[in-house]
Picture 1 (cartoon, rainbow, N blue to C red):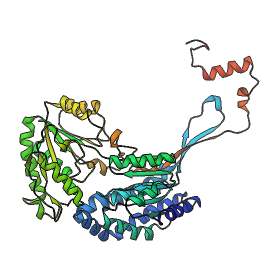
Picture 2 (picture 1 turned 60 degrees about the vertical axis):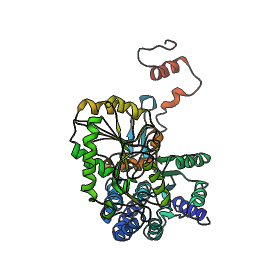
Picture 3 (picture 1 turned 45 degrees about the vertical axis):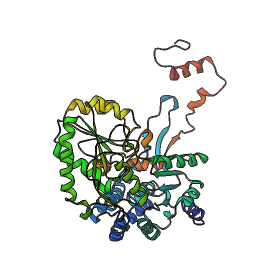
Picture 4 (picture 1 turned 120 degrees about the vertical axis):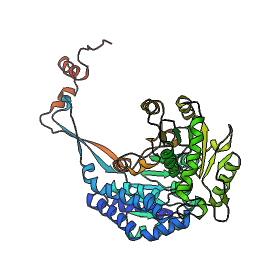
Length: 465
């Protein structure tokens, strides 16, 4: 608790010194972040393996390499994105020049979750540093090995730019009581509400990256074997503990029956006949989540998988056929359970999706142009992907974020720069010629005619509707 206020004060002191504003400082920090990830890659991979059972290749793809690529993308484009943007000046204000420029916010708080404890801490950090801010980082206490690695190496590679505060609820509460210029939170809806309430005390802007039940719709026009392989990969990546994983599948019964078989084949193809023996399949983060997932599976109908081992927190990739009212459809699963839900067609699927909170992502597996258009026009989601789940995160130019209950605000690439900056308006008008004299009192009929010509649209007369 004693480390919270001093950490925030140090970050504030560095920002107030003005050292973070030049482009050179920002590029240096992004380079340092990349260097840390490259030089300490094996240590970070080992920590992720300890916390979540992640294979080193998966850790590289979804965490270490992901952030390295994000930092590189920012470095490559930052100078261009920071250039002031000229804005046209209307005749009524001429002569003058107007432009906008991206300016730093100040001190940013980043609170990350446990499921991707490196990526979801350091990707926002990269954007905040690119925008010229200092950052206070709160890694998840539920991923202790990764949190400890962050606390060890960030002060060495990013001294002055970022502070790390470890701890649990008391430390998080103490951080939220401090004044920040922006809060970036990734986590669940309930915790997001706590963050938003705390931010309101200081009118602090907030980015909330939440979750929700991301649906997948599959129809008969697609290649079911290929669709199943991609759905299984997206669902069971990180043992299902992924915010954009397909949470449930909607399809007509004549599609669900063969799709169920193909999903079982895909699971065996990815993880072997016994996923417990696979080096490529992760583990559930802790006993509480393991018990929660067990209760969801036991409260529904398992049609494939379901095996589990509490001692190692292994939970097999599992397919479900839930009945109406099963608890598995009432909350975000965040684990290796995939419900298969029959619908009469795309109209019922769209209606079911729209009856729920807006999802973080929506996946449509269809070659039918009308179906794709229907989901594009009739649904709202943070992202919409055709024929692939989760891969939109790998496109640096796409904003990542939710809508409604799945979050507010977005980041990645230039969108991170905009999230962590203020786009300041600037106007410069010379004293001569003094064209503003026409709007200064006292007002005359001549001035009224001039002002009317600027403010009344062509073809309209004052007093006329």
